[in-house]
Image (cartoon, rainbow, N blue to C red; front, side):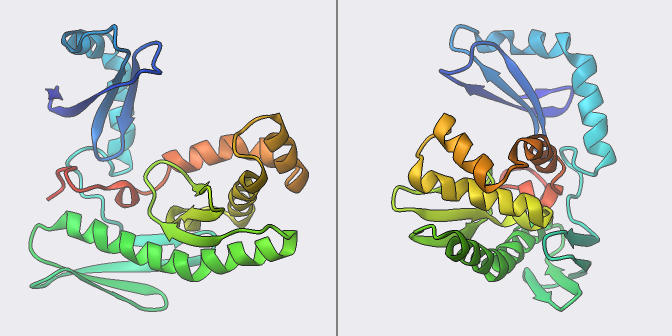
Length: 240
């Protein structure tokens, strides 16, 4: 489905009490509908919110993240590591990435922009495994938290998670955040070892470990919205 040439994804949610509209980086408009609202109403809903949607679309265009724009970066700044990488693209018979200390060379077949985003995501996960796992294990030892292990992935909707076996999963995108924010995310997951929900006991435990945790909440939301487009790209987003 398209609206004014913008891709539209409609999601049904049993938890939705009203209609939610989101302008997603690279992907277009996401419409979350309660079951009582018919999909036939979507075009009129979008028209009523046209001004807001066009403002959000303009913001994405300014960031190079509107649907159909090339999401590949010329440089990557990873705040957690205090490192910057320049990125150079060359045409090649197959998709490959060669990483140096301060630069990346990405070889892509003609028009395969999506393959470039995939390669950069894989590179980011590799860096995350090198640096985030060691950091998490160090903090676990420091605080005496009995975790079951650590893994790093390019997660789509959360900064981290803790499994029933106390395995900590961290998002490779954490490398874009400052060290205090990354520390807060890791401590958040440590608290889930003892507290499996986000109730008052969990919040008290996290505030004890990190007294600034409440101040970080808004920063974390903004950080997610400001992540580079290529980190959020998924196959089917239409960039190839």
